[in-house]
Amino acid sequence: MSTSLLIMGIGGQELIVIVVILLLLFGGKKIPELMRGLGKGVKEFKEGQKDESSPEKKI
Image: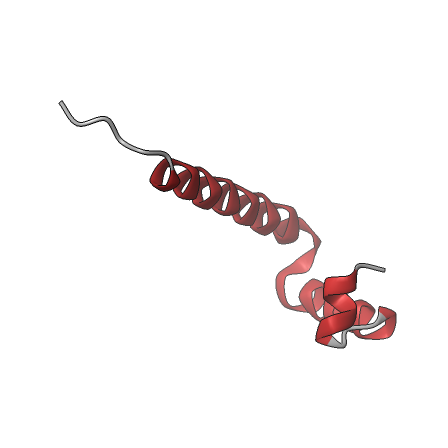
């Protein structure tokens, strides 16, 4: 198990309960769309951070 999950105090049983609640709220068809959107958002965020950290050339 990941150390970040252990630090937050989330174990296997809690993770299963969270997944079941997500399935009940959103249904099986909506979850892949939500995760895809979340992945795109994280990717754009990381690209934005990378762009900000690189020095800009001024003309």
